[in-house]
Length: 428
Length: 107
Image 1 (tube, rainbow over the protein chains, first blue to last red):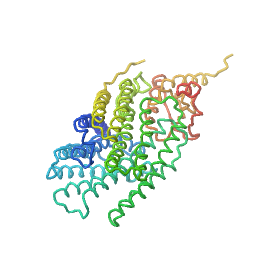
Image 2 (cartoon, rainbow over the protein chains, first blue to last red; image 1 turned 60 degrees about the horizontal axis):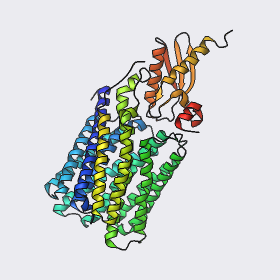
Image 3 (tube, rainbow over the protein chains, first blue to last red; image 1 turned 30 degrees about the horizontal axis):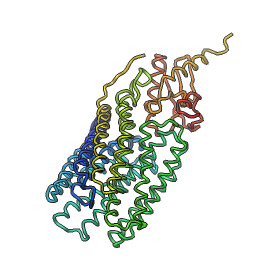
Image 4 (cartoon, helix red, strand yellow; image 1 turned 180 degrees about the vertical axis):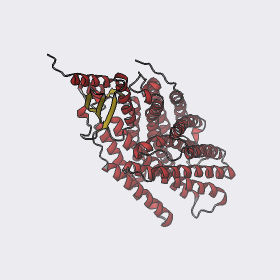
């Protein structure tokens, strides 16, 4: 066992490593989109689209939110992370697995490479889940935020498990239904169960705190928890055992009602905020929540049958996934990184001397100018790529990806600046 | 004749010193945030502070508590510093001072 101080240090290093790795993956995504953006025009079951999607969901989004989990879970559960060694092991397994999986998809190596990658990833996610379960067991704190985080981890494991089955199914074809059927389950569980549940759990705790909102009404979050989890569970059971994939819209509607409930909660948090001057990071969050309406609207348009053209239908389906992963989740992360990472690095450097010496503030650890440029850069690149996807315009996707590369460079400069910050204090 | 006792003077002084403790997220000092509910100065060598946070799980909690301790130890070396965390009454924005409201952009 590590001594408490060393244990904290180990977790600190792990959190920073998660942020740094995720930032590098974000840059890699922007380059790959620029190189292979034309693959976004056509069917989404395309090797390069699959490679980019998995780097985005695992290397970028999951890596960064796992880092924030190590930060947030001790705060809301009043318990330290059970095992820093397990945290490190799962980090290594997930990163190695993601790299190998991306290579396997990019080269469409559906044999040994993809199977090994999926196995490593499943092992990494299993270690993460066990570590979190051991951390949260016996906690006296009970709240819907923690229930959402816990359920999201279970969905993450299930997503990785179905993904592993799919990886082996390429070669051995043992699954009773067609490959795309399971791919659909894998994608829905991953995006809704893992990402959305986790984001609701984390954001419903952090945003009212950052905004100094008055009396956040947790009934909205409790409703989100039940409707999203029940909707997703029914979707899965009906699809697997009763062939009910055609009824999936009913369950997704239940899930969407939970998401809307969360959006109402967030709107109230912004409305009752005592902070009338939003910093640039909170502006990222604000924009992300507005952009979350885009995939919901496109999904409703698709389901109401307004689009009869098959090619456009396919493009709009890709647009739904793209706008959830980029318009909502990535936008949210781009802002929250500078709240969470700056805070944890600041804490490490200055907590002991706070009130004793003059210290910089967390916001002094990075360049706000670059963050502002990043905001507008991302806004432009997302809008241009999304338009390119909907209109099947490859040039637009390439132009948008070019701007995304610049945005990712700005983001990386700031993340590295924070991670390698040197303590700087002046005694009054 | 002095209108204030020695104890009153010291407690006012402590409130001034505590303005050096900043909430690093909001960039406002804890006095203008209205987080300090009570200050008690005992000339025998003890200072007691009743402190609250804007929410129970506030991630800045440890930083603020540490800041209060460090600040008072620097100004009153040798004194015993006791910090009581108080959750009643619950902090609301009404506790902000006029300066705090200005800094947050509340008109």
